[in-house]
Length: 113
Length: 155
Image (cartoon, rainbow over all chains, first blue to last red; front, side, top):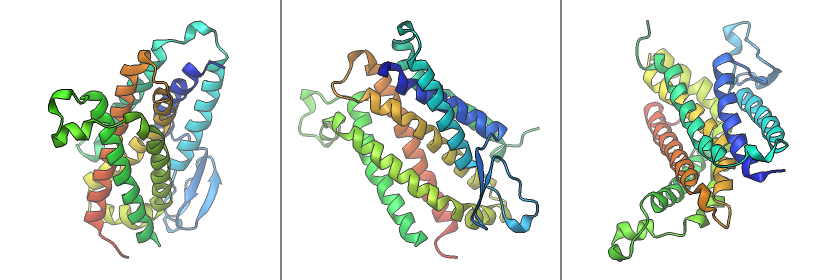
């Protein structure tokens, strides 16, 4: 296993999978805080009385499992994949993801047509 | 119980903020022999590698406490903000939860780049990842403080 890319690859994959999960709501499970119940995948409460559903934990789980699979697959790849590229991507991709998240959530701060 | 947890969450964040700020400044603005004696020199002249494991543990601990507190925010605070149409307050907290998640994913790379002995070829990545993590922690800390101040304690 090539450790020089397992950890950076995990970080890159996690950031990409996280922004995809939150934007497309790929939650592995849903938590209902009012009733303290967990549901598999995305569960939309049928009535407002039940309270809101929380997907953040599910997005984290989706991203962590997905990133672990990607990192494990990358560690088995050819040695030529290693090198400085992953080191640079390990901070450049999360930084780009942060900017994408700001863009996605811009409607909280400005009127979006 | 929730208030106690919120205080411990904040205290862990303060410790992490201190460690990460020392570490970030020490790699971006290393101490030189010339300024010895000044407070700024002392602030930067730390053994940055000593902070890495502590930062990882504190980040995980603070995020875990935040995750436990989050449902209370979701049903007790966010709905209050929505009723008052404080969309910016809701928005900055939304950003916080996502930034913290990105930071969680960044921890393995951060830990790897700070592993002893430090590799010279990852020096630039080490500086960048540390700065990014410091930005996330500073943002999360300030937003957490602002949101707590808007809502206040108690039911």
